[in-house]
Length: 472
Image 1 (tube, rainbow, N blue to C red):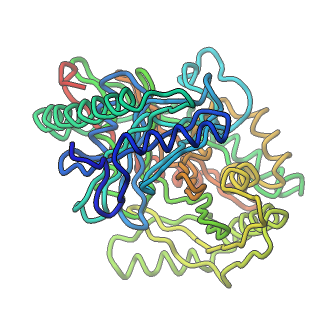
Image 2 (image 1 turned 180 degrees about the vertical axis):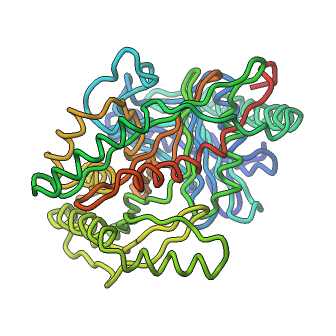
């Protein structure tokens, strides 16, 4: 690894000078800082670092942003969860390196997971400073492998530099081995048919009860969810990294994400942006109202035009627009809503989408916005408290992280959060895919069941099986 530990685009002082500067910053602040050091890596990929985390049983993270196609991944944790609060651990970044300085995710609800839930061993809320980050360029020309190292007022520069080099080379070599192992194992095979965790009759009855409550004016909208389970055949196991590869390939317009910790992984390809913040500028959107794609261009246009004119979907969509703008109002100096919904076309589905932008008030950050927006009526309902209480009473499903915010922040507080839909929780032996449907007055239970089945196909078709003895 050449000196300095950075690329020409991200110039940095020599390594020991960077450590001394970080040590001085720790003394000035009276607390440890996280020193970020990185170097160009022509080999490896974000998916490979995520695969390495899975193989080592470490916490891992993957994110592909549709805005530029660039993927990032993270491994391990310096702080967060049961350790130091990562929001109080400042980063020292002499080169201005890209990629996550903190990753986050949480459960849909606030209560604990039931003992028999597949989410029982999964954290209900997570905010972590990763130990290492891999940031791909959008064109694959210049990747960066970044290591994070805690530095305090008494750190030895030579020892920190040795630790940085050992970690960087160890991760690079590990990614190369993981990439070769995954290549030899192949792309994996699609999963077999799923089993409904709740019967169609039971789910449709729940939908019918919601429709009655909406017709009576008790509720405006509720979003019931359901899950299906896939079982790995004998001699095979589910592979999270191969599943992410499939999601990334098949859904270029989605935020593709992955979290792993121990023996489980949560992956998905979500079209729903919760919020993107850069400085005081915030972007979000309302995404609600769904129709299938057509068999040809003419049929597709017909279905899209029908969606834009469908009263039930327009009402459902308007509830989400109004709720988002109301939630943002106390946090923003100005909120701007696009004039009318447009079609957001995805593989297999099309949605109504309305773009929303805002200028945040001073001192308001992305995490403040996330806490304020979650859950939007697109995943919970409206009025929020009444809809969530209805779901708590009637939904026989622990949603876990399904439908909840996931995302990351950089060292400047800029970042992105998406809503974790079109997603699945995976172990070696089983995978659970989740989907929901927005129910308002006039909704048809059979149509809502069919809509949720279409949504389940996004991640269901991407699940990949590999031989059980294949390298992790």
